[in-house]
Image (cartoon, rainbow, N blue to C red; front, top):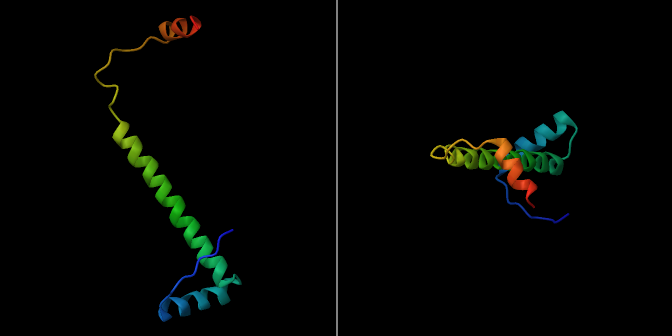
Length: 76
């Protein structure tokens, strides 16, 4: 695991200290969990955005018959 140094405001440090005492988790654990949540939410948003961009890309195409597609695949 890589180490990264953070500079936090006194207010955030105090809040993390209070949460740490209340939950029994270390400040490092709290920060790691928060970053994991942030990354996960952003990856989900990126996926949603890509799906929205892809919506309708087949709208101008004729219906593709699955039987025809399978026959096409069987040629190979």
